[in-house]
Amino acid sequence: MIPGQDPRAPDGDPAAAPRLRPATLADVEQIAAAELVLFPDEAWTPWQLAEEIAHPSRRYVVALAGDERTIIGYAGIMIAGDAADLHTIGTTRPGRGIGRALLAWCEAQALAGGAQRMLLEVREDNTRARRVYEEAGYTAIDRRRGYYRIGPRRIDAIVMERALAP
Image 1 (cartoon, rainbow, N blue to C red):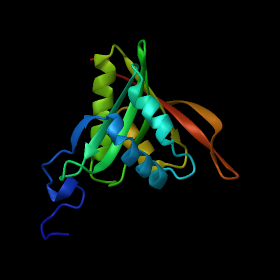
Image 2 (cartoon, one colour; image 1 turned 60 degrees about the vertical axis):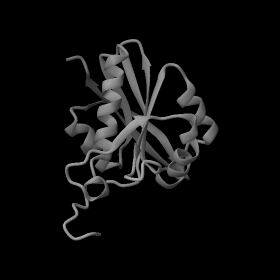
Image 3 (cartoon, rainbow, N blue to C red; image 1 turned 180 degrees about the vertical axis):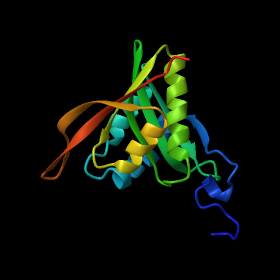
Image 4 (cartoon, rainbow, N blue to C red; image 1 turned 180 degrees about the horizontal axis):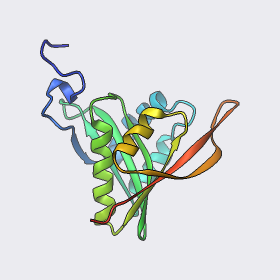
């Protein structure tokens, strides 16, 4: 770390927000590699990611490192009428605000696409993500028992919702 860097900020600049751009099919390999690291037991395949990115009702975004080539985060939503569903979100550099920036991008896209609320599922044991979602205004509305299958373990999903309409 360079002296004076803020370890929570992307590339050490505390004022810099991560650079976000819509995901493309050219990003699939990097996203799939990150999926394997972040979600080894439930990673999406490159084929699944390509289908998602290409689908007309989906919106996917990537966060880029300072080199403008390395993907350090990604997220995707599905818009269906007045509701949007957060399908995935992940960052290879946690604690730097990248996840929050990705979530805000997804919310803006959902609102622009006509959604008035966002839904998501989060693992019950993922306290860090749950805290981020709660701080962003999401509330738990349901529980899906055994939704996540991690080897022999079954982990509940907490379904959360937030109104998007201004």
